[in-house]
Length: 259
Image (cartoon, rainbow, N blue to C red):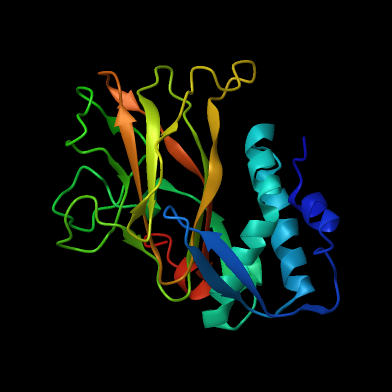
């Protein structure tokens, strides 16, 4: 099992200290079967190396299955960075970046709107832990990740700005009791098929419940996405959390309260 982003990118000949990768186009297949093209900016290979080196450091103490999700999707994450760089045009400098230079951060609860506040008032989660008093019906508040625009209805898609992109690779649930068994992703107003999140069967020997998405959800600049889940039992504290990466300009990662 590959657990290193560096080694994964070396295998694709993307881990270099010199030279530039040329502008390209990437294609995403939507839920309706349509092809959507994304422009990937020209970029220094050194920037890709910086991303890989920092990711391996950040993942060093993570569960090896979490590491493997980032390594398996390393090329797609580089594509997302390059797509964001079309607008920022300042490259990826990581932890030492500033201004319009890009950095990436693994997902934090405080980055997402609290799904139990609706109509939406920008109120961000303080924890992934969510109180579930009863199984939620299909018409109930099944939203997990949504818009953070004030006044929007519950279930409005989260929109990326011109200079940011979001990747969700899978989900983890460290809770002692599990309450979610299915998920549905929506990408640019198109809903994908429901997927099982069978945490009770996932990796039973390593102590963490981790499920990989069949295909990663990549939300490119100016695009939208939504995550809904199915709660199948009553309980107290669900601990579902996404595994992924948010690519942002460094100027938007300098305020801990809003990042």
